Length: 289
Image (cartoon, rainbow, N blue to C red; front, side, top):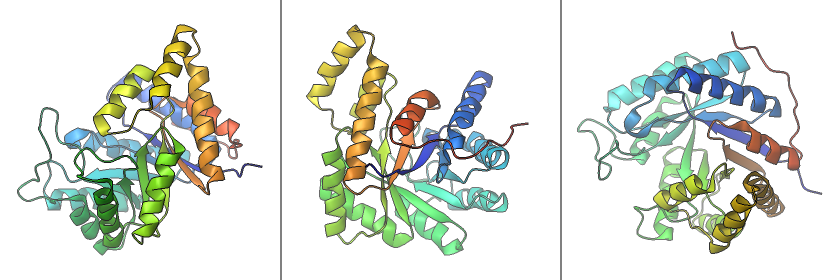
C-alpha cells in the first residue's frame, strides 16, 4: 500500500486582475489538501517583489496556510534584501526559499549588485544569522546549466545546507531514477537535510518541453513519442495525470515522504494527481474577503 505523502505547492504572484482570480481559485482548490507549506515565486530580476509580498501575506492571512516566500539577491543591495526579509518576519512569515535568482530579461548571466549578495550562499548565511527564518533552497537532479559537473551541483548544495538551510526543493525532472541518483550523490557527500522532489504536472507538453530545455532538465525521447500520440488523440491531460502519478508513486516507494508541486496557478492536474496518491481534503477553507 502506497503511503500518503506530505505535499506542498508552488504558486506565482498575479500581474493582472484575471491572474489574481486564477491564483485565488487555485489556492481555494488546493488548500483543503492541507499542504505542509505553499511557496510564492519571485520574478526574474526581482520584478514581482511587491506582488510576491502581497500574495504571501494574503494567502497566509486568508487561508491559514504556512507560506514560504521566495527571496533572491538579484538587482538589490544587501540592505534592501534583508529589509524585505524583515517585512516578512514582521508579518509573521518565517519561511523563506532562498535563491540566487534568475537575471533580468535580456541579461547574459548573473551579475551581483555592487552592494548586493554575490551568491545564494551569502544570502542564506545572512538570513540564518537573524535566527528568524526556516530556510529552504533549490537543488538540481539534472545538472544546472551553469554547473560544470553534476558533482559540482551537489557540492554547492552542501554549501547552502551548511550555510543554514534546513531543506532543499529540487527542480522538476521526468524520471524517478534521476532523483534517486541525485539523492545517492547527496548522501555520499554528507548531506542529511531533506531533499524534496519538485513535480511539474504537465498542462502543455510544448511549453513544458521548452521550459525543461532552458533549465537543463533531461527530456526522455519516449516522452516526445507519448505526447505526440496523446495530443493527436486529445488525451494529453489523461497522459499527464498518469505519468505524474506513476512518477510520484515510484518516488514514494523509493522512500520519498514529501512532494512539492509546481502548480503554475492551475489546480486541476495537481488536485487529480494528489487524489490518485491518496491525498484527500482534510480541512475547510478560510474565506477570502
